[in-house]
Amino acid sequence: MKTVPARWEATILICRKCSRKLGGGFGENGRKSLAKALRAKGFGGKGRKAGVGIVEVGCLDICPKNGVVAMNAANPGAWLVVPKGADIDAVAERLGLGGDRQASRKP
Image (cartoon, rainbow, N blue to C red; front, side, top):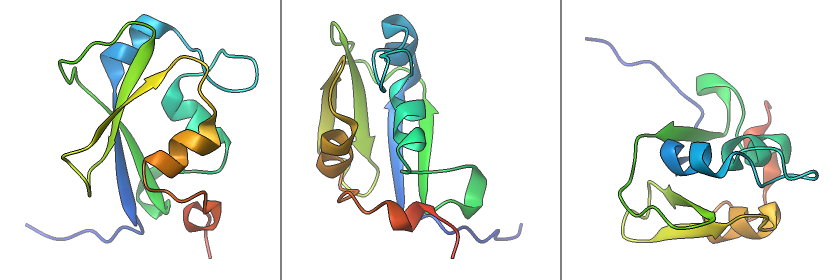
């Protein structure tokens, strides 16, 4: 077994089933999933070199109507139900990303 280094400072988990059922609802035109909208705003990125890992996971068994369940893995006791059309900057702040998009960019 070996360890592979990563630059992730945070890991955000987003329910894939909620995202699929909602069929978008986020971003400028409301056509992006929550994960893609967060990445497009500069939070997260691709692979292990990103400052924030945004990972879509299987069903989290909350299943809100017109919303998506998300959580910061560093705070597993606080799950967030994000309503369709929510402001991405506000969502990022509630998830503990603090609005700092620099963490997701390469140095």
